[in-house]
Amino acid sequence: MSTCSTVSRELDEPIAGTAATARTWLLLEQPGPWGAKALTSSHLDPALGRTLEAAAEGTGVRIALIRRPGRHADCGTSAARQVYAAHTAPGSAWLHSATVDDPRALLDLDFAALGRGDQHTFDAALAGRPHTGGPLALVCTNGKRDRCCALLGRPLAAELAASGVEGVWEVTHLGGHRFSPTLLVLPYGYAYGRAQAHAVKEVLSDVQEGRIVVEGCRGSSAWERPGQAAELAVRVAAHEYGADDLRVAATSMEATSGAAPHWQVTVAHVDGRLWSVEVTQGASLPPRPESCGTSVLGSPARMEVVAVHELRTAALTG
Image (cartoon, rainbow, N blue to C red; front, side, top):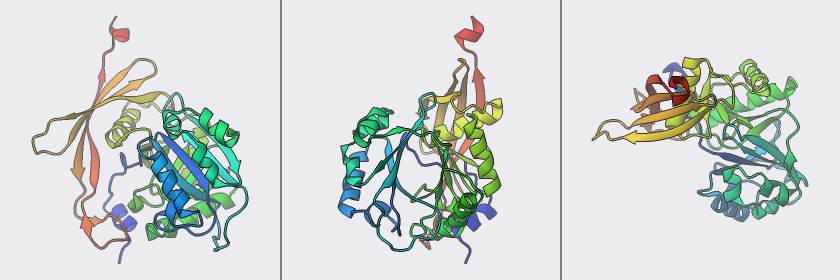
């Protein structure tokens, strides 16, 4: 039986507008095995995991567990754990790091402030500091969520680490199993699907220079799915690849009276230019498995960019 990622690739399912949504990512190192819902099914205290999930709910913060690439024997936990927080909003993106001996220290964070992009709560609670290394490359490898993540993600993470790429971590869940191997790059929060090692190296090299690679990109986690698709479409149409150059300024859902959902998305450039992007939601056909964990066939929602229009602005017409 074909895996969900094989079927998705064979059907050439588009991946733009499929990234997880998170304005801020909070990553906690947790060695050893992970269950399907890793925050409550790993060596992390499940009561702590539930409390962290509740604290982050509705704040714009997404919590994930990370571990070094390699073998993951059931060997308990290490004393000191790495923790990262990254805010992904263009123009104010940042990545900070800390080490903790007790993960319960994360309960001292102000999650609402962290979701707004206030790094001071991270630094004060965990003795955090700005990350001084290169970008982080987070590869989803949680086979308990979907076997494609283990079959395809773990070899990718191992290959990147073996070739000397810094900042490579395995991560618990990025969504979109059928696009495995999936990757999240921080601090800017762009996700990639069907990733290969040579392409990941190019992505990381460009991020170091403040540029975004659009090939294979699922979108920025800073935006909801229509905004992700719209921003990527503007990057392609206008050849604008600066990480901080574009932002989703507004998204409005059009009345459809039973038709497919339709959005009007305004994308703004730091230089004052504006684009209006029409995005509609379609269904991926024919039906296919959305995950290897289910035998039910589905038609995953897909973001389809109908049109991209550059708008005249007062600065350009005055």
